[in-house]
Amino acid sequence: MARQLLVEYYRCHPESLDFTIAAPLQDMCSYFRFGQDILCYGQTVGYTCPTVKGHIFDAAEHVGRHEGTISLPFDPAQVVNNLRYECYVDQSGQRTWLESEWIKKIYHTLRPFFPVSLRKYFQKAYLRGWETIPFPTWPVDRSVDRLFEKLLGLTIQILHIDYLPFIWFWPEGHAACAIVTHDVEGPIGRDFTGHLMDIDDAYGIKASFQIVPEKRYTVSQAYLDTIRERGFEINVQGLTHDGRLFWNQEEFLRRAQKINQYAKEWGTQGFRSPVLYRNVDWMKHLYFSYDMSVPNVAHLDPQRGGCCTVMPYFLPDGMLELPVTTTQDYSLFHVLEEYSMDLWRKQASLILGGHGLMNFIVHPDYITETRAQGVYKELLEYLNQLRSDHKVWLPLPREVARWWRERSEMKLVADRTGWSIEGAGSDHARLAYAHLEGDQVVYEVT
Image (tube, rainbow, N blue to C red):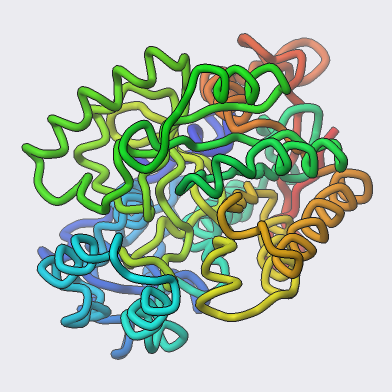
């Protein structure tokens, strides 16, 4: 299973890897380390800690090596799934009484009657202490990706491989990827859509618009046609944006039928849940190619947690997840009260260093005033700089989803000249090599 996990992530040749899992593992899932900088959640051979604040067992000291086989003191597939699917959240000790379901229900019931100033007050009270949450790591958490790098490094080291070939993460050898997404919350955002597209076009960047189908505002066919005709993308954003989509499964299933119908009528491929509420186990009832509802670090979101990766990944039902890897504009402007690019730059730099996906949410509702709009224009200018100076790919979300699905089916095969890539879309793929510099895995793209 560990071998298959790395093959899926790196698209490398399976014969390059050989892992076994030590036994027996502890019965309970808890926190442990794999080296000093990688925090895991799952079962391992040693003592694990139920919270991230206690003494944490380091599983790296119990890695076995025998005749080219690596024996791991935990199951990497379990750890990766526990982090990506946020299975650790209820055991993290992070929850407070303000995060209770009954509090959320009261808030969302009364929210339409609150002025923005009062909403901000409640949101800040709810989020108080967010900066002290130890896990996931703020402002970007790459625990899953660093675990993969660590396992690949062990393979290179133990098997005495100088350069391990794999299929590079992004097409045409792009160093990383960035997408801009616009969640339209209300009539103000809908009416500002045309002007926002003008701004995006001025910087040569296309974005997706996530539209709420019912109750929030009228969605005319002309409105949808205008977005498409200008080369932007349309996705479905929940059903009514009332915070109740995931309150109970019966209600979710009822709404999912209507959401799927809108997806069919609008010809959309992507979904985003309002407020980034989510339940991975229920997503199988939504018929989309990809989802964009899971934050990388959810410290500033009503539903805490985070997937701890900056790479796309598949949900259990086969839907692709494009995680939200940067802070939303609303949180930046109205919770942190920052009108600068500092945080976005820091997050983008960390993601670029990990060759990951920068997923930005910018609401047309919140950038109508000059100061916020100025920050957004700085962001677009910065993304253009990343595109020219660092070869960052700036596609639409649906293009990312298509590429990641194609890459997941590609194979690395040996031929007379070395290695080649086979599969649909392979003409855009690039061969890469991983090697060690000290204890660090370094990538080279051909």
